[in-house]
Image (cartoon, rainbow, N blue to C red; front, side):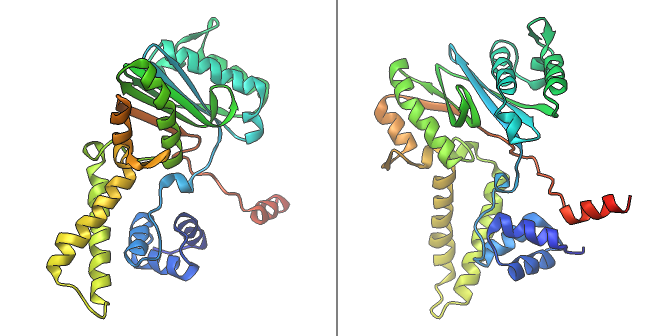
Length: 302
């Protein structure tokens, strides 16, 4: 497979690797971006790249909570300018309210009533009125004894670039008091799962493969190599333990009090975290980057 400059650029931006290292990684892995990231990490040339680091889109996430139920909706726009538009913000707020009352999927909410019309019809009318394409893309629903919401980079009340929901069991006053802190923690750290038990096993296997290859390569090039038993029984398990603690919510050090894990902080407060949702605008959308010079040349050529 031919490795293009655009592929090298994407890999560099997602990993922080140098240009030649990024190119070599792609060549060695036949252009496979995910494998190239792992190759760079094995060589100690890059950190783990999250897909969210490579994507971008505009719009807002709206959150709404009532009686142990919370929703987070994402509505995308083409430009950030429209995301600041009062009409667009009203749309996000109203769709979140409908979602809170109606369903557990985007399709159900799109078909639900909003002021005598379906949500989908209201979105289409907003597109015509505002003059920019919009997409009601995602809906997350969370239920629990108590559900707390938080919005980071708020554009208006209940909406912003990142929306977080946290479900907790325990006394409502205690859950609401510390739940907001947990939600802020989630917005900042973006954990991959609630606990080790809920972490994607494919992701764990991939990380184990990277850490194993990296540890063996480092040991082979060391002036004082360690016995294989030390590598397999101590170093690799230690690195995996760190990976799990850094990427599972309950295992993370609580940003408000790093001496405690989130799980320990919840227990100390007399509550239990049963679930969460973190929705950031643009996750999973590859932003199309235009080549301005090529675009102009194309226009000139007719």
